[in-house]
Image (cartoon, rainbow, N blue to C red; front, side):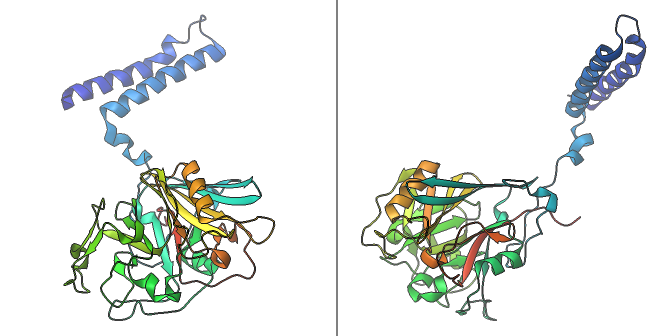
Length: 348
């Protein structure tokens, strides 16, 4: 619609609203009825003006910010964003849930974000001057979450305790190893791409790394991963994969980490675009814990399109609003990394 026509229609709408008090002042329309009619017409006029001149209301929509892809703390959560069951602002919603089923206590965090940069990680140590991560430093989940201004956080894969787990690890587009990443035939891999989408790979099948690649800025161009269109934002080598392309997986009974034992477990899954779930199954106390297969079945029943097992046992820890949301299995274990979600609302 041409601008002159829009302006004419807007002027007509304004004239109608200005005349309404005179039209509606007749004895036939008094009190509450008059007020309701006036409000209805004003609402229709406002909607029409929004359609005619959308820029006039652009400031009504809260801006969605892309956070820096680095290890700096995210913006602090708004105090008024917390509710009895979660957290919400214009850029993120978090719903916390506890379930008790068949002797298992499940702690669940449902998360929806507006921008992939809100899915973040924190490391206990620092990259060195050459841009590689050789640190074996560890820290507690709560300490890292508070330092990062996390709304909700989950332990990562604790890659620092095992060189095999360093083989294909990325954090904020950077490999954590001092060598070019390589695949392996023992661990499943989770890749999170720059769009925030999850991709699981069973024992590295579907991932190819150019053997001539060098540890530099062009490294990602030398990595091919089936289904991954964008760059690798984060990658984890732990597993097993639990749900893949909407299908529950039959977990290898010989996989590491006591797959058939009832243990505390932690997992993360993707429900849809920028929609995720974090889960901890408690164990070694009032809750009996779960096997890998039971965890896979649970993540599938929650509706995950992709789901992945993270470090468990004494490592399994979910942080929310200043406290641990789950009961820890014995003494708290310090780890190398966490995964967390943050608000994208910057300080005013």
